[in-house]
Image (cartoon, rainbow over all chains, first blue to last red; front, side):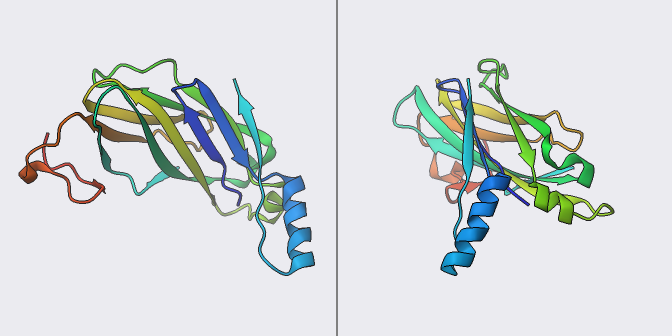
Length: 48
Length: 140
């Protein structure tokens, strides 16, 4: 199961969330199939 | 249901204050299959409390999803599913003392864990030091 990564930046008043989405999951699977090695990727979004 | 992974007390030795402090907490959540997927938003709020117990600011809130469509499709309905949520928090310590790291989840299966960290201006006597970078505080 995907593991979200959340950064709470209280100094600058910002929050950053990074987690694998379905599209990047597909890209990872395609990359693995094409290259025969493990590849990881993620997408991120920020708030405030 | 939630489990804090490796929870404890961290002691940060600062040459001078105020100084920025960065801490990390991994929370393992257990969720039913109907709580998963990109269509289900979950929120987690992080609150840092200062040495007087009062919140530093309003807290920061994040929205996230647990599991892709493929993962949800493969999840068993009669089992709880484990998700590791990795969190980092940065704040400014203005004085020496104990600060509270608190996570509040609004999802049904979310946690209310907290973690303590200490920012100290001076090193305590050797007999009162904590062994290692992370460990149990012997005394205050």
